[in-house]
Length: 252
Image 1 (cartoon, rainbow, N blue to C red):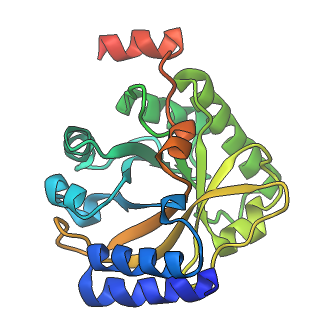
Image 2 (cartoon, one colour):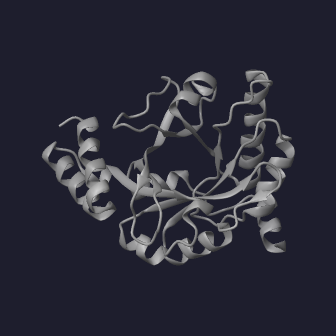
């Protein structure tokens, strides 16, 4: 069975019975194809749209990781970020924070806003820059330069290379082949895996925006990570943080 066909089976199971049944179905499909189910991990991403998440039930649904919206532009903070950030940690779910990038807003202010909002601990997932908003009045070269400035500032501060989130059409038009060395998290639905430039690496696939997960009273984005828990650790904050981050974390 080819991977697109297996994910088609998975999506149908998600709609019928939720994530737990879908994972069981997917593992059976992988085994029948001669592949190891440990090569994939299931995760979600949440924001204010999911409101108050019951992270204990999420953990029981075999969710291994969660990306949580923290900031947008240079002033907005997701009202559920602090709660999601702490409760996911309490349940032992690998957590990561993401920033929604607005191309027309000062990149330095956006960088400062995220850093002032998010304190990472060793083992947390790398920060994510959510890039999906078009700005027709701005040159592509300037937008890509600002993206690189945010990514570089985040890596210097937290000591881990950030991840770039986008969707397939935006990636194709604005990002493909321009960010070698960075890992991508790409949204593409309809049972079709994302396609990437030969020099780009995709680590996460957001395969649906209509997932059903116990503990969340709304549809939620659901994702696959291409690897096991050991591989996932390579995308996390290292045990030794940069001195600048340690000082800031202590003063908050």
